[in-house]
Image 1 (cartoon, one colour):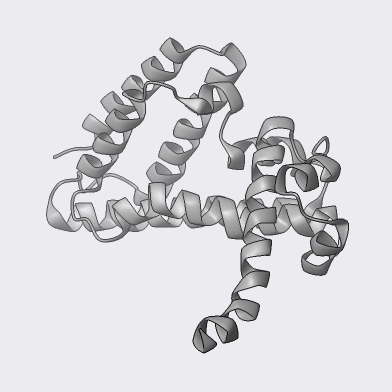
Image 2 (cartoon, rainbow, N blue to C red):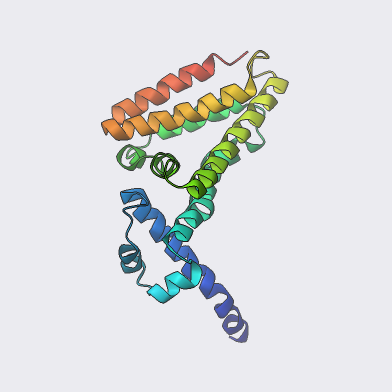
Length: 206
């Protein structure tokens, strides 16, 4: 009991921050950053304004924290980790695309990619957002570039493939599939676009 009591105060602020970030992520994903409502975030969490402003100076600070503390780890788990060590990046990407295409309820068609949504909305109007978003995008490209270079060494990827340019294209193409599918609200278009990207990956193989 004593140990639990001693540990509780240290854990509570982290839990509160996490709760706020998850609610803010959901609100921003639904409505965009500029239309996101702090009142709704507090209603969704049952927390007070005091709790919110204890952790975040303002709405902008909350939005930037969502990028780094919620979107980044989700993207890392989904996209970075499968490519981090593999010597067969094309096979890893094919597996990922197949899994995405087979989802019964691809929420990205309805709401879009959280990263891409914010890039489109906030990069033209706020430099701090643009820098954070670009850093995350470039980190994704760098992971892909390193994986392709590793694939060239293992013999899976053609030697003539430019890892940097190809990595940028693959990431951009995937984000484009999601963005245009959100615009059309078509699961069929989303899956068709993923299939085309999958076919492109085949052209990179030895």
